[in-house]
Image 1 (cartoon, rainbow, N blue to C red):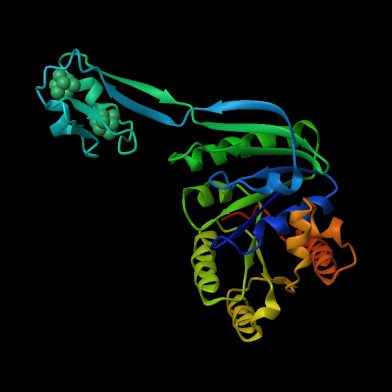
Image 2 (tube, protein in one colour):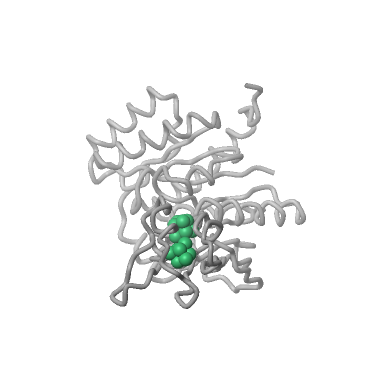
Length: 299
Ligand code: SF4
Ligand code: SF4
């Protein structure tokens, strides 16, 4: 079984449309949406949820003002400046600033502080027309995306092993934050989606530097390459210097948007379009490459 994570240095590069199209081409796969902050693979795959699980995202402290004697020990010890005085001169904790370290709870001499685990995040196992999808939804203001990504990937792996699937396809998050790191840890290969803009190249460069530290094979594709041929050539040259195979140059086509509106992948919507042909070739190249690269080299 192999696991491929599709990433982009920044949002809006068309990563999810490409992932969805690949999902329809991979014959034996479990799909996994690692973009838990802004999951949108489900918009194309419209899954039927068969399992729903709450995911504890951390602790939040709360002060029982009837017990509080205003010694202010907690106020002076909270390193995150989460404890404030309200209009009634009572101490309150701002849940958005509270990091859930639980120090205040331990040091309060009156036992006036209690912490509760927040379960604002949920993850799901669903059926889709392309197989099982593991995905998640983070509550507003939640920050534990890395842990949630690790959870959905763990479940995807369990399902893939139980059902003897050949692939796990991860729709990774944009950027280089903890969700991207959690998406890359232990994956077999990465596919980066870049669009021909200076910011996309800059962000892809940061992402590639991150991926380099994982020492895994990397492929890249340029989406909407014909919108700026000069920049696309610069990206191709850059990839060459990094020894990263450019496995596809996808042209701009409004059909990609129309496919999304129709809740279809581009390969379903227009199987004979240039984009669909490029994506099919890209998948073929990746499959061929996995036969020749050592996915688990000794370091
Ligand atoms: S440490 Fe306890 S008693 Fe002291 S101010 Fe904080 S909540 Fe009130
Ligand atoms: S749990 Fe930690 S971060 Fe939250 S209010 Fe208490 S001391 Fe501050």
